[in-house]
Image (cartoon, rainbow, N blue to C red; front, side, top):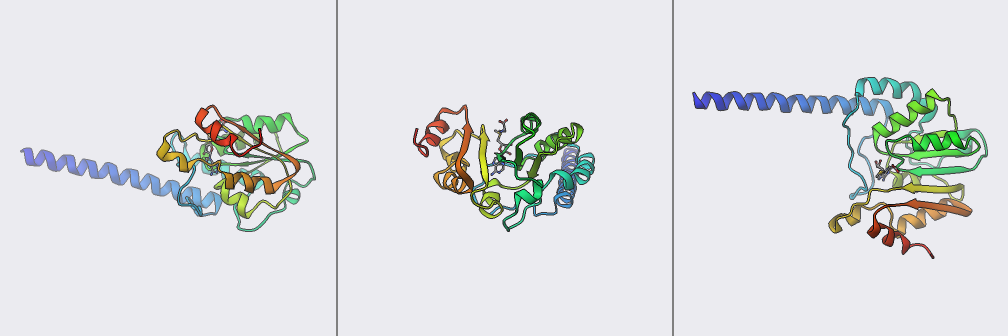
Length: 221
Ligand SMILES: C[S@@+](CC[C@H](N)C(=O)[O-])C[C@H]1O[C@@H](n2cnc3c(N)ncnc32)[C@H](O)[C@@H]1O
């Protein structure tokens, strides 16, 4: 009887695991389909983020993304792109790295219609909410790249074309053993600097004191 009970629990557990695997498989298929790129791809072994999928209705979302991606999205490529051609104007360009799930990114673009905003984010629900807002309020000065910002800056963004790069509240990775995951390093700041026009600005906000001291080292302040 006891053995039977164990056997039933085992089968039940297996069904749940299979179910979760199946859901994850479909999520990945849908995401791949939407963006036409390899998920989880990056050239870096240590990433500055962990991908999270929770709280998203993927079937519904994929329909929205498929409709709106052509308007707001730029698919990752290994070649430099012309942002002037993509935005179809010569207005100043601000890049927001990791704009997150709230709609500050798109609302800022709404507030400054004479500036082009390029957002780079790996978090799918964040992209979704910003794209939905942009569509609803007819905001056409934003574009979004769903990829690791480091790769995007290395391979897609040409030199000397950005007015500002903003990174608001980058993941702090407060534990010492996780510091290597922090996106802001001297190498990354040098890379960003190359992409800025003369007198361009790197605008960083953080509420993590140890990260603030770490970042300060890379600037003459
Ligand atoms: C703590 S959140 C901050 C969100 C937003 N900037 C804010 O102020 O609320 C950090 C964001 O950066 C994104 N992120 C981290 N590393 C990234 C990377 N290498 N490329 C693109 N986005 C990244 C994460 O997905 C996350 O949404």
